[in-house]
Length: 89
Image 1 (cartoon, helix red, strand yellow):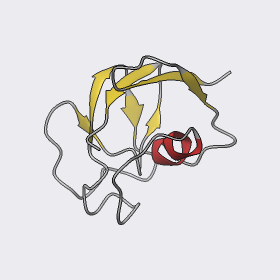
Image 2: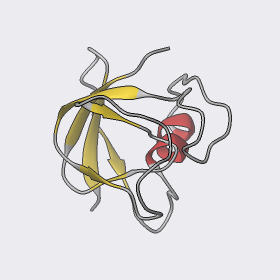
Image 3: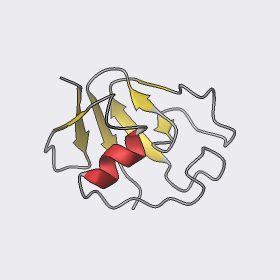
Image 4: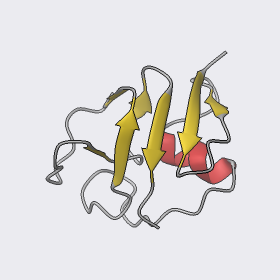
């Protein structure tokens, strides 16, 4: 079983399955979560979200866009624990 993801204030969990989901953005979209996105590669910051709880990793390396503390880029990260995020849609 993958990591549980809680989105916005709904706290309706679903799982990130490493074999099926390339990154967090793909997983969120597959679950019907509306997200702003553009480059889908960590360059533009359009999908920037707040990480409330948990941890993520960037398998492709650190994104080029500037991130403030507590911000993540769902287009290029994967959860490494159960997470709670606040999207900026």
